[in-house]
Image (tube, rainbow, N blue to C red; front, side):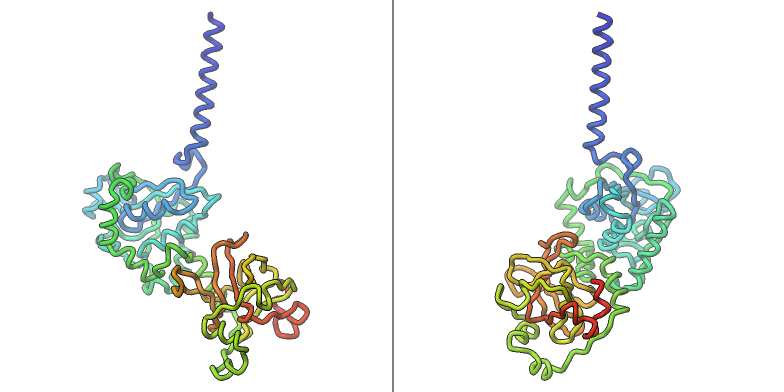
Length: 374
């Protein structure tokens, strides 16, 4: 009997341990310490909104609304909202840094707040609603400083950034009724959010398609840096363009036309070289990034240099597309879609008539020798 009791107890203990391990493996909401996740503590006004936004970012494990920055222990909402406790409404974001970096979390966060208002956030006024980043270590501080500096230089928010960097000390979770408020009280949340003016402001800054076709701040920064070092190209006069182009080339580039699929010059071209704007000669795409998409038009995963490409929303059909134009020539090139192969997942579907192909062996002679490594 004693042996059975020992065996039974040992078996139960083993099962409990295995159950505990399985529970931890299947529960992504564990603390950062337990699961080696990283934490970001961020203030962007009403935490109902920032919590709802950050929970949509891929790689985020958990978001908790709360308070930080004050000296009063475990403050209540009434104490913080009064503006007398010294705290700021914040969210604490637990994220898997193997899936999303700290900079990417900050990038996404800044695109969902007003980082220029040091006296509040939209309809919520007072320092308890001001934008801030609570850095947890020197690395986070350095990343935040660099990103804010570069975003400020873009001028995209039309005002200087006023997002405060504060050393993290303590986080106090808000009352339970504040957690996942947008899920518990969707009607009240949607009414508040609309009345706050948050989305109207963000639509003005980033465009109405910002959620369907998001462009990150890092992409804008990299494009701005690239534009500072690119060669400029001259666009001929309208008369010169008309005389230079064939009817099809003119129709496509100047009248936003589309050539026939499988009946154009480059859809099945496999030669090595680059494709340039038929009007100005600015470099657009490399043969190394070309792939057979099955659409009947030349398709690429990315441009040679995004600084030579401009994208804009195209509403001419019954659904919204993203048009691609050349920077200097302003030529209509085609459209870009999010159904391409790795590594970008993009398909730049171009018109052959909008481009001129330069074979690899002629690139140096025509002034494109710098692109031979491509």
